[in-house]
Amino acid sequence: MMTLMWLAIGLVCLVVGAESLVRGASRLATMMGISPLVVGLTIVAFGTSAPELAVSIQSGLDGQAGIALGNVVGSNIFNVLFILGVSALIVPLVVSQQLVRFDVPLMIAVSLLVLMFGWDGRISFFEGALLFVGIVAYTVFLFVQSRRETKAVQAEYEQEFGQKEPVTPASLPRNLCFIVAGLGLLILGSRLLVGSAVEIAHYFGVSDLVIGLTIVAAGTSLPEVVTSIVAALRGERDIAVGNVVGSNIFNILCVLGLTSMVTPGGLEVSATALQFDIPVMIAVAIACLPIFFTGYTIARWEGALFLAFYIGYTTWLILHATSSPLQSQFSAALIGFVLPLTAITLAVLAFRAWRLQRVTP
Image (cartoon, rainbow, N blue to C red; front, side, top):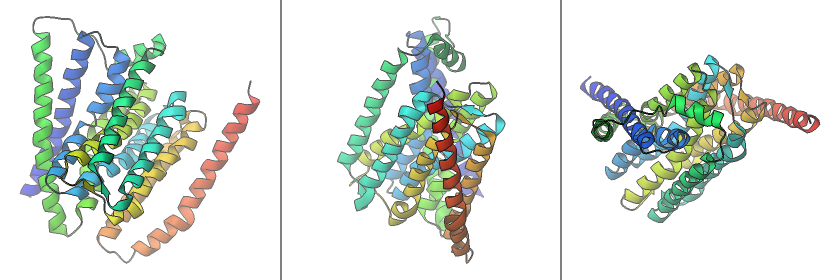
């Protein structure tokens, strides 16, 4: 019970810390005259991934490679299937053309990089550095791209994330306190979460990877859950999608990159992650393209499909971790019937949307 209590306290610290960090950094940025659009695309999207960064680095330093890797892979799967699924069930989501043409293909490409870099069983310091260079380049691209956005898009981001705060003598120290407090809570929360998650894994006899893919991944993704659902409820439906895609790119390039750099000897990648979990993350990223492409919206039924797949994925993890006799039948049904039917449906929808675009002037 004490371990579960520390786990809950760690999750609360992570969520409150991320909120405090985002609030302080975004207000400080707008005070300095930085575009609200840039604030939304960088500080907010990256700030909601701060728990993943804190937990993965702490896990890597503690020698818990399974939690560090599982946190990133599990969070990316959770972000797309659960967060977008729930958000689309609330209200159909709008997908911008830039996401379909650039950001989602980039998300797919960096997901494939994880498989390539980890193929030898380890993501080295050099490979982690390459990933980190990627997030620097992506951030520079966002700054350049923001200058080309319309005033309507900038106003939307300003309303959601960048309300300008009146500059007073107390503004600067107050926002700096938010940032420092947020960082402190993130560090404390990551230590509590990792320690309690390892104890739970050992108690139930399941691997660190499974704990990272489930409890830790869902817990560190709570800021993305809140951000995307609130954005959807407020009608900022493209921001709900952009936050998820941006966070997934950040998770791989920055979180996995930095974790591989600070972990002694690089980050170990297990055979189970290479054979199943990382391919699932890649498949989920690829599945976004046809769904996003069909009318540049995520309909409610598509959100339900995402959510159903997340439930199926989590069920498989539980069956596998407990060595249940039902695992083989569940896997056979999933691979032999559900996945092919879904792939055919998405392919037909994407083909119809492509034909409609060709005949429409």
